Image (cartoon, rainbow, N blue to C red; front, side):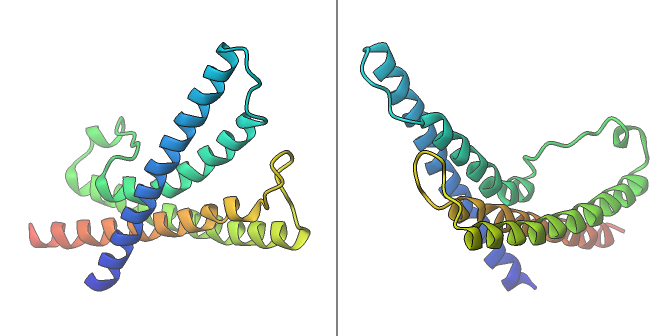
Length: 163
């Protein structure tokens, strides 16, 4: 189990690094586009479309890493007013539901990618195939589900050791 967790951790780290490169690319594209417009030069065509697709890719690449690092958004309005045992039960229930949701979305993402590939869909202006951009949806949800699973497993082991 530890070897699988280590592999998933490595995959999450690689996806995180790819996300950082994509974020840098988005920033540079926007800076270049704004600078060209400021200098009254022709702007790079359809930069908005490209940065929107890259933004989607960035979101899905970072999801698993954020869960592992505990940096994802959480709402603790309710859990801050309950006992630690109730918090653990709520965390387990929400984790299991999150895993099921992520697996469903990964499946639907695979269906989407296959559909885009079979239809030969391309970006409107850049003429790139759409499916390579979309492949991060099932990949991101799968890694997200696995990271949630390992967080739940580690929390369960830690809570059992603390008893």
